[in-house]
Length: 167
Image (cartoon, rainbow, N blue to C red; front, top):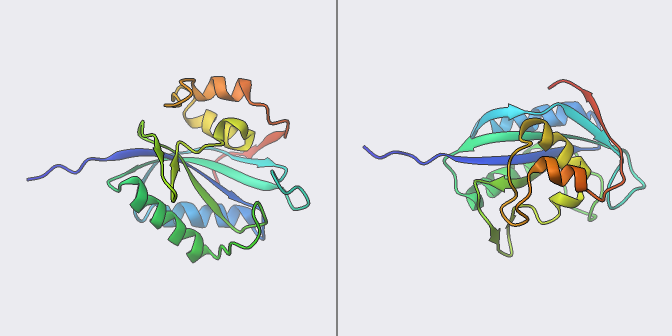
């Protein structure tokens, strides 16, 4: 009998089109079909980052357990985005859903298709605030600082506001 190795990953989901809460819920439900959701943060609202002439985003962090390797997980997440209706047209543009892998175990991976930990996470308050709620003591495997310290040191000036509990 073989034992399946389970991997721990942290994701951040975001939406700034249509019924944003509904899209975040749809993402959670679809992810739960192929990974166990251990924790979900509250939902946070922040102004758009990168391309600011658009509606604010709602974001949520998820801690998941999965037998998938990071590349297979990323393929599943991209399929989830496509299923929900994501169309990639403009960099940092509006989207019904965006799902990023922030951490995957203690892995450091830099390939053309996937970068883990997410290379800009330490500069984005909309990633760090929801992640801090569920995993403040996780240590960034490259920077060697906790999520709590990264949030304290974050240079991003955008206000991130908790909108309530888990939807």
